[in-house]
Length: 226
Ligand code: NI
Image (cartoon, rainbow, N blue to C red; front, side):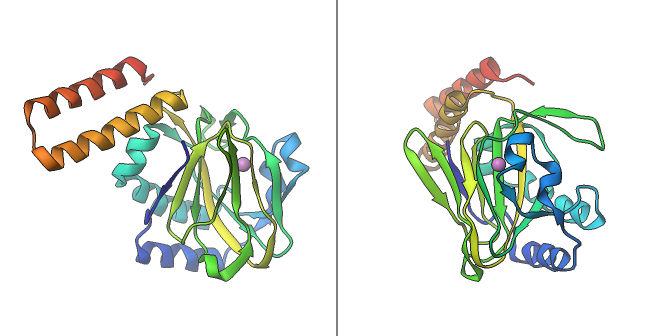
């Protein structure tokens, strides 16, 4: 499932993060790439444990925490501490699949990457190119969202960032391990959760709505690894 989640960041949070990132010291993005992806990667990244990265990350994790849509779609078990990248004119990231596992250097914690996420921080009018292109069985999807919006997609997908031809594209990106490993099961639960919410809106907590809610949780109990 490829899902856009609008307005993850409030305007004030976005302004605060942008101000911090404007003054930050960026480093070569190849430092965190795997062997294959290092050959196709050309961008800048914020050092993981820099003061700015930590402060911006805290705002973003708090914002994710209050997003019911993000929780329903991702069913997060562990979130890798969000990172930040910047593509200037001529920079891009060729085709690759994200590494299956990520170890967080500071904590030593390892997670399986089930889902990848990009939270756009630049206004789309401010740069040309820079689309995140994700391939799935339905074809290629070019994603370029307003600042503060997030896209979530399976980490198993082949993807790339098109070269930026004008301006700069700044984004936050991260991986997460889901309680439900299989994308098809997670998608089914997400669709069911949305349908139950719509039924509850229309009919209140009638007995069949309560029963469906129970079925949702019993499926989640069956499929989740906590
Ligand atoms: Ni990637």
